[in-house]
Image 1 (cartoon, rainbow, N blue to C red):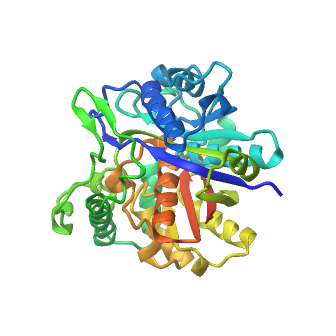
Image 2 (tube, rainbow, N blue to C red):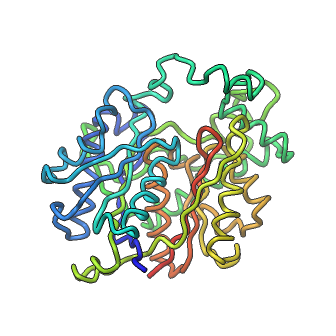
Length: 380
């Protein structure tokens, strides 16, 4: 059977809201990582058959099928098509799934999967422009409750009994791990530096050093007065883009390229859309069952830190070794540029697997609507 393999994975640094990348149009930010990706791999962009691009807020500067605009902005030939995907926070992880399925089915030989979100320029929620996306039948089914991710994070805290100290401790550890990875040079092989009005940006902007649990304890909760979720233990609003060059194993061999990893297993799971953020638990269970692997077979996990309660609940139910979970930090430290986050996590994971000789890695993300993707990669 044909394997879908990853031959290169690159990302921009992540910028803070209204930070160092805020002056870059999202199509140009996408174009930068696309151009860098094919250059890194040494592949003629004319060979790319499609660009599958995740973007959540498809309005304003991120509308008009930004995948196609990005490919043309990157200088790719006009023969290279593009399609934009929205599975909320998992959009670019879903792009990888679509790319892998197309390759295995024989519809593609070479495709790029990734995504972008400039949350500075296209604010979260702006695509609905104040409209109610939930019709009468949805509201009737869920007793008139409109899903809210922050409230969902608080509901997880209540259901699993997490304390404010636990979520703040996770946040501090996320920043510490990301800072250590930055200092060790672990991100250098994956980051495509961006030239901006602020200079050459080559590091993630949101990482904070020297924080303490005592310091985070001073922050007010955001969604519930007596709750545990604060800005300090939630993912950062960010700008960023990431992309993976994927192809069939036969095409990689024909081009003389050495694949980094193959897509071993790719699944989806649905869960309660009100609590919304628990989908990674059944998605991980489904991925492990379908792959025939156990949790102990997995050498690294990337579980998106949308809120600290999400990986805490996931770890409680899955039982993974915490040292293997987000070893280089997560979205609390490095940011969460919605449509680009799935590809960012996968880029970080595949480079970590390569650098450390880890055979299997598993990535999962919670997504709006109560969904989750889970992907297992195998190092080649």
